[in-house]
Amino acid sequence: MDLTVVVGTRPEIVKMAPVVLALREEEVSFSLVHTGQHYDHTLSEVFLEELGLGSPDAVLDVGSGSHAKQTAEALIRLEKHFAEDPPRLILVEGDTNTVLAAALAGAKLGVDVGHVEAGLRSHDLRMPEEHNRRLTDHLSSYLYAPTDLASLNLRQEAVWGAVWVTGNTVIDASLRYLPLAEARSGVMDLVPYDRFCLATAHRAENVDDPDTLRELVDFLRHAPLPVVYPVHPRSKTRMEEAGLYERVRESENVLLLPPLGYFDFLVLMKHASCIVTDSGGVQEEATSPVLRKKVFVFRRSTERPEAVAAGYAKVVGTTAEGVITAMREYLDDPVPPSAPSPYGDGTSGAQIAALVQEALAKGPGPLGRKGAI
Ligand code: UD1
Ligand code: UDP
Image 1 (cartoon, protein in one colour):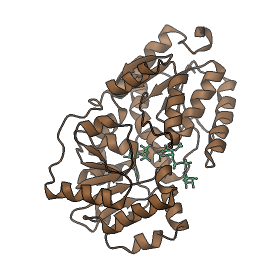
Image 2 (cartoon, protein in one colour):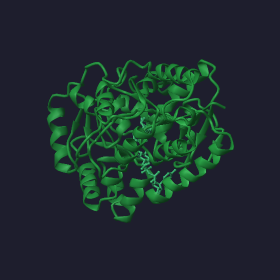
Image 3 (tube, protein in one colour):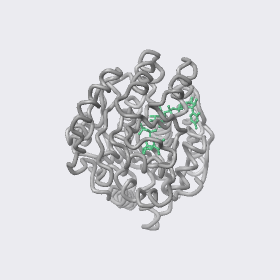
């Protein structure tokens, strides 16, 4: 097989789905490998099923661990998997440990790597994702940047590979799946509030930091609108360890839910009055023409400044007071943003699939074994 598509976590499945479906429509042969970084049904299979990807050709059972252990385990298992029958191109998406491991495994075997969502920069080196995306960009032969700014970042860093601006595939995903989600999801039956704020928070630099975790909990309990919060397992564990989970669960201002499938989550986004999040994908999705929501980014920085410039996202820092003040200001006059999405028109998956086909037809890229200088 000339092409291997690698995924490992929830957002990679969501954002790779439009590329995978476009490759299938074009009858391009490829294999789908899941590292198993995410393994719970609610973080993995539910997405493969709902988005129509089906079962991966291989699941490598990498699982959880420290960053070094998880990345190393993924690197070793991916290398073993690829070495048996090396593809000519490995396609990765985003900035997780899976992505870095796949890019490294490819580069060390002399296989070209294509990076979907290349060129994002938070300039916050506390974030493991910032290490992963920078290193992956510099190991890639083909870089699919979502925006002009991401492309500029790559050119300024003089990456080796060829760069294209394609939009972000998450816009394709929201457009494609929202109608299905609205037909199939019953999630709104669980929500006891007329108006609510949807929250997600799972970034390591937030929930692994006890002070920031307390600020998050204070926000949830005292937010000016009731909050619906599907809790990522990392965050649930951290709240339980700190003795905060029950305190949140007992609050009438908060509905805690397990991590949700894509259909339920899209429907909650659609019905929310606003969103508070530290997620990357959610910042982008909120700009989709079928969602268009104000997003308060519970972080000190964002690698998605385009969403800020377009009036969707506002970086509010990591204190309860910061989020609550920003939310109150918005709720005084809640006009949802209406600018076109800076992340494209929903054709990114098809564009990337076409570029992948072109690359395969041309022969090895700059980092592929036969193309290496
Ligand atoms: C990872 C990515 C992050 C991405 C997120 C998407 C890295 C460095 N981080 O963070 O960029 O935003 O996925 O959701 O790659 N766990 C489970 N079940 C699972 C998976 C994880 O319970 O199926 C728990 C384990 O306790 C684990 C913890 O969650 O230790 C963290 O999982 P991990 O994959 O290491 O990082 P995420 O926080 O999910
Ligand atoms: N998402 C979901 N269910 C949830 C939370 C998020 O389907 O309970 C989706 C969301 O719509 C987005 C993606 O997961 O497409 C974002 O994943 P996450 O926030 O875990 O990762 P990040 O984008 O921050 O890397």
